[in-house]
Amino acid sequence: MISVILTALSLVIFLAALRKANRISAMSHVMAHQVASSAANLQQALAILQAERESCHDESVRLEARLRDSDRVRSEIARAIDLVEQAKSDLNDRVRATPAQQSPLVAGAPAVLADAAPVAPARTLPVFVNRIVRSADVASAVL
Image (cartoon, rainbow, N blue to C red; front, side, top):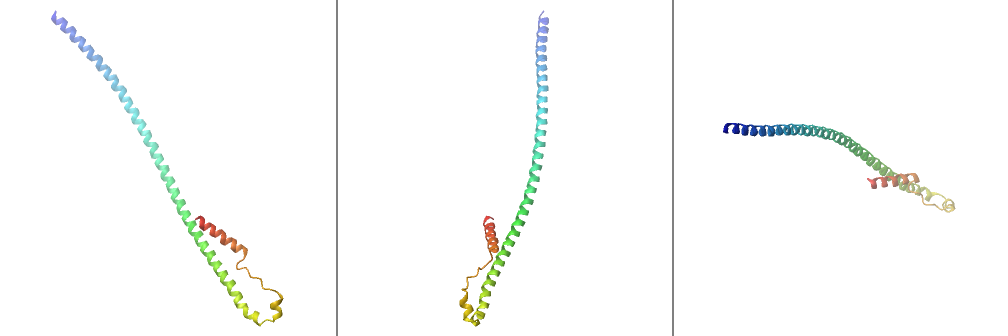
């Protein structure tokens, strides 16, 4: 009788252990599924980050090219401004030199011509040159 009771008790313990093992197995399957899902999500996130990195790299290359182009244009503008300033100084030198060269001719001219028309001060530069110089000064101030 004791052996039957012990056998029944061992069967109850065995069935309880088997039930717990079955639950643990089901939980491990669920956990394996969650781990696989997490791994797939991580792979997807990695692919998105790599694509974002590529697009950022491409954008960086484009921006660097635009910066180089802007630097080139800026240097060309600076060269053009220097040329305009040089032309302005050349024109100023020519305008100043021209009255100095004509003064001996005026001294030798008859007094009637000298008194007939008062000499108006000559403009140092034509209007369009002044406009170009002012716009160049504004452009250099902006840069």
